[in-house]
Image 1: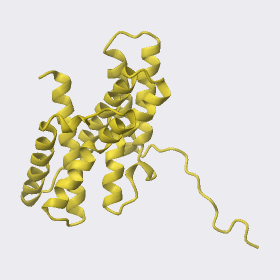
Image 2 (image 1 turned 30 degrees about the vertical axis):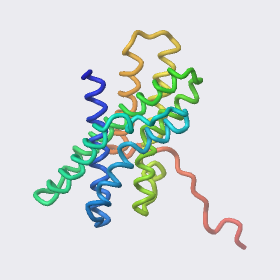
Image 3 (image 1 turned 180 degrees about the horizontal axis):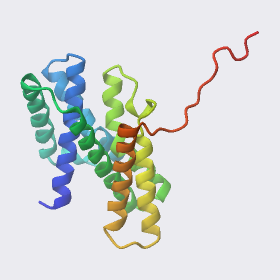
Image 4 (image 1 turned 90 degrees about the vertical axis):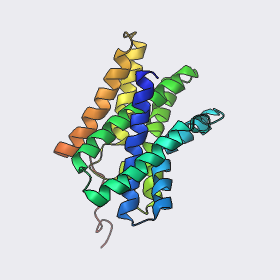
Length: 209
């Protein structure tokens, strides 16, 4: 197993933990825990593969994904009964998972011959769409839309950086590594220092007389 494969499964496990914790906050049963863990961990990659027409979808040909997700979700439930999960550590791990998945999705799009802008979109979908599905199923405003959470924005910036460096002929793996650093850096900046995009807000009294 290559290092990238190991990191891929680490990212899947981290996202599965995120989904399991979301299920715990909504007090779902074990089936609900596993379902949210699954959609969080492989939802983005599944949507990417459907859009690209890649069949069979990646996790259908490799049962290890389902096993890793299920085990991670159940271990999260067991751990939570014993001790409160470390929130800060999970946020950092989630940022790393976002970076890995977004760049991986961008590379897959690139290898199919799509233009860079399409690669940025698909990379962002790969990294963040699973969390969107998780939040929708949990009846929450998706994290990517909440103020003060540079989530999809970080993925867009990182994948764009990847394609810019690729176009400049940077030596591998510099483009991928730099793109991941950008994603993690922006995501952690949003968490630690409240870095956010400008907010569009309409005055509720505007237009009233």
